[in-house]
Length: 484
Image 1 (cartoon, rainbow, N blue to C red):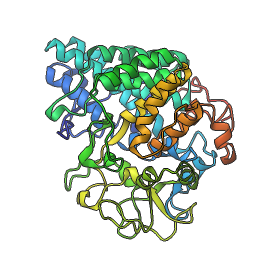
Image 2: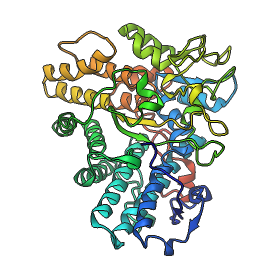
Image 3: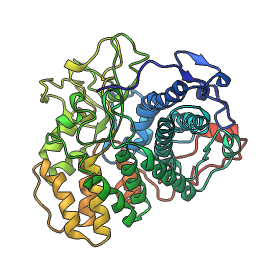
């Protein structure tokens, strides 16, 4: 079943003003075909979409920039690592980062590289003579992917340039499109995808974007916009489809044998080929994995004391033990977490248990944990989105029912009349260390209260600075966000 991403020849990225730096144009391809010779056949169309999926797991998408901007800026995690190692990460813990810091640039560049790939596919596949149903599906997959990348960008930076085709790339690169228009495009792409994408795949194609994945992202986007009726339209369709359920064992949910399982809405597909680091290029697990003695990673993005206290306050022992791996703990797979004797920022060294890959699954000669998929959306989140929408619509019993399913799995008591805050708290614990918390705090207007003591400033740190390189390459046409 795993994986549909295979050895492939990727298209050369076309140069646009926004992406004129060499780093953007370096697609790290195994073989390169001039654009004039590409997009001629059905195989070209298929390979162009495979390229999008393959690039989802690269450094800028899943490693430092991803976990730093989306996790370490929250109250749930801290830098971790040893004293002085990658000290720049501390600037994100205390909101002291600037527009020239590398992760700000990587986050932006990585997503626009992929948007460019999506736009190439969306613009060129329709002109290829091939099976019409397959053609439509491939375009829908590219639109789904583009929507997720713009969703990242609009949450991170606010107004952003929004190229949507090969033809408008150069002109759109010089304009920060208002975020409401970006959200409108995201919704349109996802709605188009819902109309075409299949409910499921079989065999080697399992892991590609499905109708449920597009609906799931639509529900989340509508949640950000507080369009609760539209949220419920999507969550109801997902829940009533009968295609998804909760993995009974919260620990096994994050292990490799259970990838693309009953709870999976969408995952970035990763794999390991022994001795081939170029193909085994996901470093998501590696950057967070246990460092030091008998380790298998670098030890960054450590769960915070604040997160541990939140689990304890809720009596949530099951999710805490899975999410936080303390030094001296033995996992269900029998690994003793030895790690380092000291970790910056905490008294007892600890690591992200959700990114943990057991020693028995480590593959020699590649990045540690490269085989582990990255969970981007799970059915549990759909239930919590559904509960939040129902609370906002006054359907307290309905919200309680969805919340109950999530809490039953981890043996927490039923809440008959949940409040909005209790649902937010449940998101905090269920989705902890899954790169959701910072955006969630901003969305729910909790960021100033929760993150203010860490250095967060209202009306500034709700978004990140536009990379200075972008401002420079556009000769100041692209303006900086306020406060930076």
